[in-house]
Image (cartoon, rainbow, N blue to C red; front, side, top):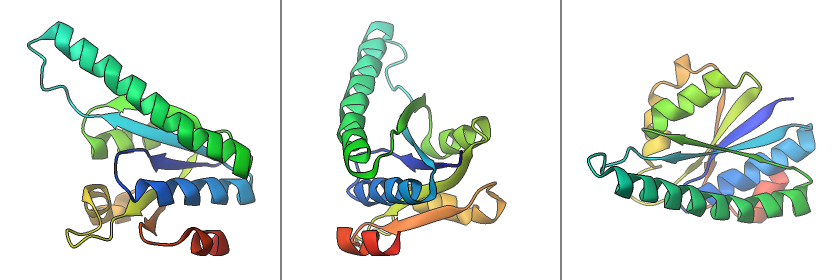
Length: 151
């Protein structure tokens, strides 16, 4: 089964990327894999603090994921899977694509602020020609109705 890989983070544009991935998966018989990345721990010298922070990050991610997962199951009939990795975002995204051969499309949300589309879109689009799968970039300002129309 072809999976749509979508990155779960704290950005506003993440919502549209999630919607797009779920709608495309539902209409194409695919799946959705939600990837969340815990940034490198800045408190490595305090092992106990680092472990607590890591556990809190995982708990926050799982709660956030469940909101999206419930919507995907209830509205789209798609049961997403959650993958949590630790490290720098772009290398971890590329590693996940390499580790799971069923991933067929990477879906990213693009910010619409003056600062540009966001760091993931900027960094991954620079090397898009060498990526092993296509990347779909979903505008963060696109309406839910427009997303439904194009998927």
